[in-house]
Image 1 (cartoon, rainbow, N blue to C red):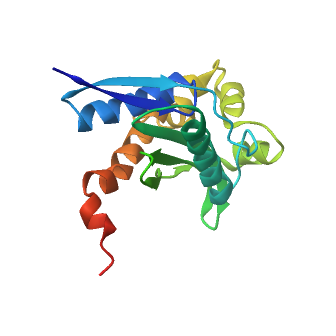
Image 2 (image 1 turned 135 degrees about the vertical axis):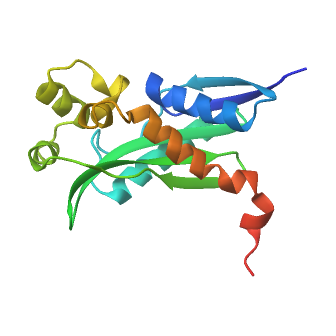
Length: 181
């Protein structure tokens, strides 16, 4: 008999829901994965700028899900951008929570053209900026900036999947992660 594992994702974006469903199916092949996306406020700007704002947005989404839904795991992903000393980049923070433990993870950086980052500073969202630059529609629910800028060798979903895969480590080895000495 398959046991059902309920996952609540703090977004209705199919890219985020699919990434979460993928990693839980990978780590829990003996379970039926019930993965649902819900509208969860980030309480940060639609386009977070800086690592702190981006991380807080993901944590706010997970905390909202925990307060309003019953599940085995709560997951959120928040994309952001920052001007680093070596150039502008976009990245995502991911948060996984099982009501006992909350783990924060982060994706790798995608270098951003300065002209696109500057548009973000002027209040535009990365998805909209990419749609204009590449003449696409709603790319944020598809391959995202990552897909466009890597010629689809990586995608928004593959980046979320990698970050979530790594963030699962403390759940898989809770005894080791709870040790301090």
